[in-house]
Length: 371
Image 1 (cartoon, rainbow, N blue to C red):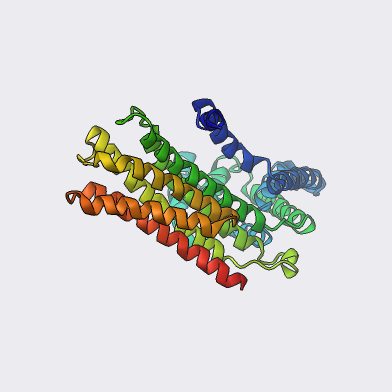
Image 2: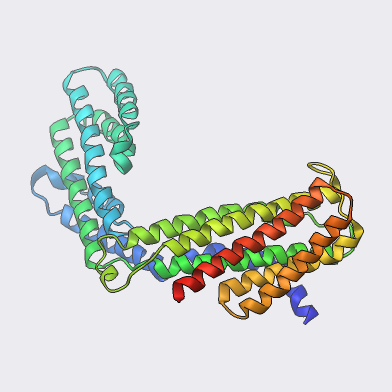
């Protein structure tokens, strides 16, 4: 059992686990379907774009670009992005056409196109399309200066066809709902936090003071993971808007939002504990004194807290795990009350108690919702 635990926390295992957590989001069913839709949309746009009459087919290379941008993760975002892109590109083409028509030399109209386009790109209401205002303007004054009328017509026609095809592909291949993926990421995050806290417990159970410092960086890195999970919950909400699948599968995001906030809070408290331990070991960022008699009980409290997070995640043995965790945290508090008052050690006690309370709240809310 001890060897298995050492293997789980070995440097190779940690690196592999971290690498898998970064690769896993790239090979989900959701991402694979999005890749397939992009491939179909780009191919169809190129073939259809070459069928346009006259000089319009000379600009067929803009159709695949439009299709690629029109294929978005959700139905609503696909339509919204298409409208924003058409607006932004249309404005940029108008700026470029006007500058070419004015008869100014290229070394005047090119910087003007870029400058005016960048100023208009500051209008946030244009959304995704604002990025393409200066691009379209510069393309007209440089590439399409010889025949601006044909270039502008070809650009807008081909790009519009591509956007339309991308949006149509998105509607035909209905995007999957991201509800399960968002909740799975939250579950992974809970497990990740439990492992982080367990690492701190392991550090305290080894020779004191420890010579490891990697857990300090890990504690801070997890705050970025919370941000990523929060973004996934936001995308999950949007995936249901205008999506026929949502008619028979409801999604209440309030529980996921509350879990994210709880995890964010826990992450901050874990960082507080990490900083306090760093202060006790290396006296950085400030010197912290941790009573020797508290090391064992503190390690036990952190270990029980990690198990309580796992119980929160799985719903298994919640009451028993909570009782053990509360007893261990209380034991650390008793050591603190017996020892001389010290703010650094007090920070650790507060962090333990507040994390326990926050998990209690989330479990109570979940149980109330199920009742």
